[in-house]
Length: 195
Length: 179
Image 1 (spheres, rainbow over the protein chains, first blue to last red):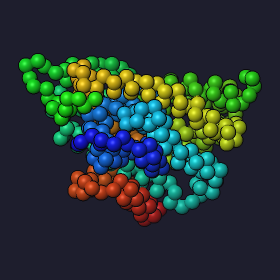
Image 2: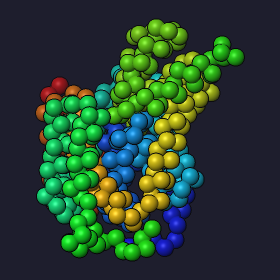
Image 3: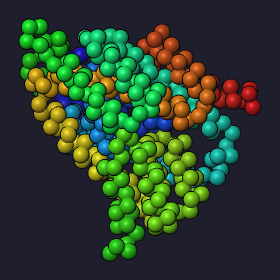
């Protein structure tokens, strides 16, 4: 995926985050971000996106806004982070206040809960699909697949706390990914000067 | 000055921003303690009501703090509470991201990025499972999620908005039939 030569416009960044934020029921729209940013617009590579996703989960705070800040920083620095964060929060801010004001009418609305549940479930499906894609096509080592499955089992099935799991898995995974001298660098998609 | 409700909101909420390790769900218990027991801004029942509203509306569930700010000091309170929650962790994340991207291209950066990538992918799938569990939609949630996986495999270009709409329609139809 070629890097865009023109810097991404702040308005385009704000608009994308605004739309994604507006539809992020249950917090599962990372897959939409990935589609727009990596596949459609080519603003980031897969590696950049997924390592940013891992960072946004590891750092304290709200995962979805951390991801927006990471994306904004990558594309446009401080002003980009600000635009992405504001974009992501504008819609939900207005809607959550409107919903609180109209709460007692809203819950009485037939089908309201069903629509929210359906949107969340479909968004989860999109996340699963993205996880599968990256497991199948993107990985260059068997160790990556092992780490992916181990992470999923520890957090998703065993529901162990994130921090100890990461303290164990992250160093192992990074050591396994360390470039070896005898082998050509496996991450050839990164052209020299891709700063 | 400590009696100003806006200052109090910041004092209560801003530290939670950096305490939320492993996601925003870590803040709900301390937030409840501060807002219900210590400051008595809302009753326990109101807190649960606001929690439910934040969950069913778009955006992070942590928009609950926005609603608490609104209860305390109206629109300005909502704005202050929102910024108090999202600014500290965003500044930290920005600093880490900038340092991170500055060293792009070095050997250790490549290794860490390649090492973190499968962890990110694993967390993503685990996150999906956790959302389905919290939503409590049972088999229907799983069915719609897996059907979405199938549709995306068959039609990779399908627009996210269309997928979400179909998910909502299926839920509506099934709930209407099942009562």
